[in-house]
Amino acid sequence: MDRHQTTHSASGDPRLVLRRIRALLDEAPHLAPRYEAAKKVIRIFRKPAFYEVTQRCNLKCEGCYYFEGNFQPVTEQSSIAAWEAFFAAEKERGVSMAYFVGAEPSLEQERLVAASRTFAYGNVGTNGTVKIDPVVPYRIAISMWAGDDDTDRKLRGASVFRKAFRNYRGDPRVLVYFTLSRWNLGTVRTIAEMCRDNGLPLTFNLYSPTLTYLAKLREGEANDDQFFRVSRPDDTPMFSDDDLLAARRTVLDLMDEFPDTVVYSKAYNEWSTRPAPLHEIDENGVAPRCGSRITGHMNYYGSDLKLAHPKCCTPDLDCSQCRIMSGGWSTKLQPDATDLASAADFSNWLDILEALEHIFVYEKTAPAVNAPVADAVFAL
Ligand code: SF4
Ligand code: SF4
Image 1: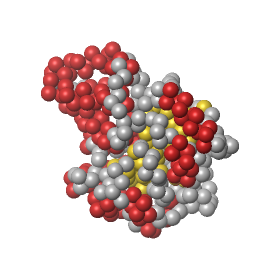
Image 2: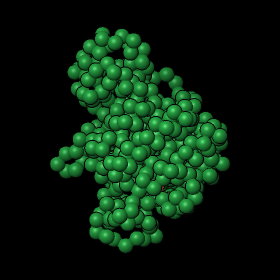
Image 3: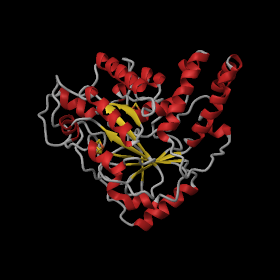
Image 4: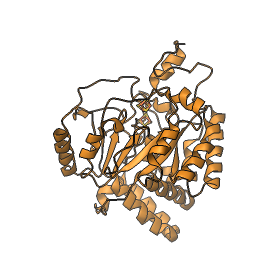
């Protein structure tokens, strides 16, 4: 994994947004320092790029985001010198945030090491089963899908969550993100306790179905031994509206109970678990304004180091049911009308940006970002 652990900024009308923000700051000047801090965060995301480190993975997650749908195998670049030269050129191109995605990047660590002296900020999305070399100075985002063996096996094909804690206890690069689903809400408290006891922060993702997975359900396809092993039309990890509210409550409880461990935003929790589709959907069933869309200056490269043009970093997901953290947080990098409706809404948006920074920005080696505000703001 994991292409769903990314965020980057969307575009918008800078002048209108800035005018509205100025009016809100006139009304609530105490929010100004938080707004200045939010602008610094957004500057970090001004030019993201995505690198598929490998097409290999060692798990079989139910409804996998990567291998299902229009998966196109490529011949991976095997020369580490070529990866080094490629990353050096990307640095020259001005990439401000590098996302190392997969399948599973930890299976090709020399490629991660090749990038380790390159970018100011980076994020590696991993399933946590293989420890990533400490020289890689980036956020390590570990996906977890369950806090008990049976549910982990059911959802991922193997019980792996304990191994991730053994690999990364106390590692300051690491953030655990738990993919909440209908099948695992009762197990997440165990993960919160384990994160607390192992010194790792915890955040959340929401299970989102792929188009392939939905088609298999719809057509009553038989289960297989790959990414459709255990689901049935009447029993899936997908959320109903009631399940979403249960997920919202679970997260709120954990935020209150584990305030030093959970990194999240109550405002984001409320927004991301609302029953309606999170994103506006166009006539093609795609979310045109989702912040995760690979458009404009955002480049995406396969493990052959060639430019690719997917819809987003999880292209087989159904936009109309998508609550994945990448699409959610990246969309919130730019405030929409509801975020700017009142000073209270603006304060909530700032709360989201504060959580976003803690989730995605690992500061160990990163220098200050001094992009001009006009570049970074709306695009923020
Ligand atoms: S099987 Fe799981 S860990 Fe591997 S690429 Fe798919 S979703 Fe990611
Ligand atoms: S809403 Fe659509 S474009 Fe956005 S992350 Fe989800 S699947 Fe990708």
